[in-house]
Amino acid sequence: MNSLKGKGAVVTGAASGIGWAIAAGFVEAGASVLLCDLNANALDAVARELGEHAVGRVTDVSDESQVEGAMRTAREAFGSLDIVVNCAGFGAIAPLTELTGDKWNSVQAVTLGGVFYGVKHAARQMLEQGRPGVIINISSVNGRQPGEGQVAYCAAKAGVDMITRCGALELGGRGIRVVGIAPGLVETPLTRKELEDPAKRELFLNIIPMKRAIEAKEIAAAAVFLASDNARSINGDTIAIDGGSLTCGYPALLTGLKSA
Ligand code: NAP
Image 1 (tube, rainbow, N blue to C red):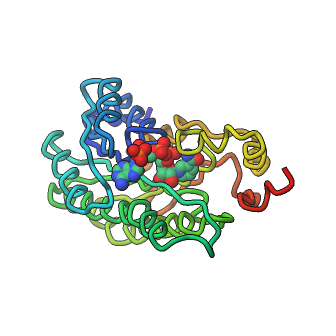
Image 2: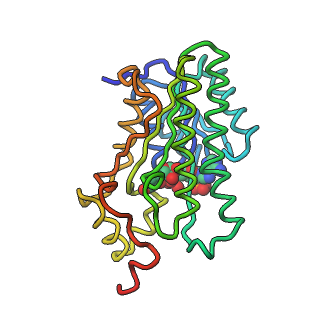
Image 3: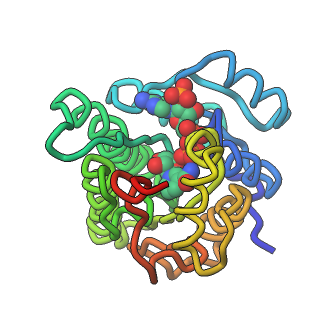
């Protein structure tokens, strides 16, 4: 049993998809969770659903002062900050030669920069309080696997994996583990629209040996384990939960549908 009883946690991107599932998994395992996301109404709805051990806070992870405020608030509200999951992120699909600088910057600001701020300010609170902690960064198979039309996302996620390794190296000796999860295809609001297109769905499922998408609750189960003492020797690694898709190529999102 992976118990998180009495732990204080922050989850970013918690109003939807994988972040929502992780927050639910943490509450079920006994933690109290500060849910951070952009949309106040969506946060309220999730907090209500998760009950008294979840509270929402509007936070833009690309704004350092907002991230710092969220980490401090969680520590004050729960008595300690023990677990932080940096989950908020998105990509942009465009040919490399067409991708605008603005799009590139917005992906890096949230998907990479938000993780840097999350690790930095989680670690500061954890060091100040003098208790061990765990930081989990949500990466992607695209941190290792290039995707056609996905240069901004792939570069950001590769950067997330390196933040995880650098964090583990610098903080491991001070009681803080930094680990990552690299999901494959998970059916969430982020991917649902793409997957509603039967041709695209087939393209994606073809590169997953198990021929199915991952459920968000499977990512949550891994996060609960990684946050627990059962994973106390796992540090610096990013674990793929992808149905085996890293054994294959990535779907050709720009050219693969030309004949469809
Ligand atoms: P999702 O359903 O879109 O959830 C992401 C949440 O993050 C949304 O509520 C979004 O709010 C929020 N968000 C966006 N920008 C933010 C910001 N600046 N500050 C705070 N919150 C922000 O996506 P998901 O599929 O659960 O993905 C979650 C993470 O898993 C991402 O890092 C993604 O790259 C990664 N991942 C997903 C998959 C997959 O197949 N789904 C695979 C690999 C990795 P709005 O909706 O209001 O923008």
